[in-house]
Length: 95
Image (cartoon, rainbow, N blue to C red; front, side, top):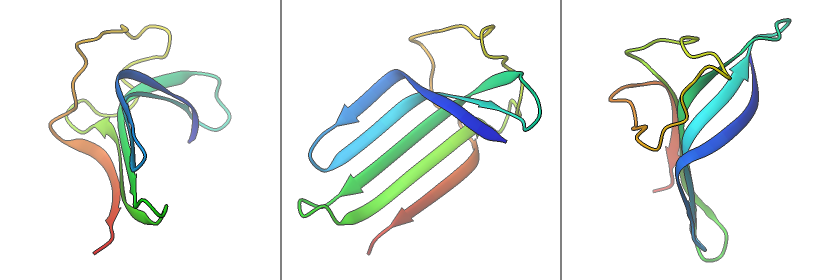
């Protein structure tokens, strides 16, 4: 699998200590030209001295499954919401 792009369709927060994006990830499979979109959320927090405090990266709607929305056929909507259950979740918080 490869990631082509992330489209911040709903929200992007940028501050001196946080960057977060809610949108769509465009992805494809090796050896294929077809691409799909999945819901995507990412957040990175750093201290004022630029030390990593934590991150969250979440992708895919677990209820819908992968490869249901072809890129170019998806509806660009301002009413997109986060899935109740994410398919992939990567996170770390510094204690």
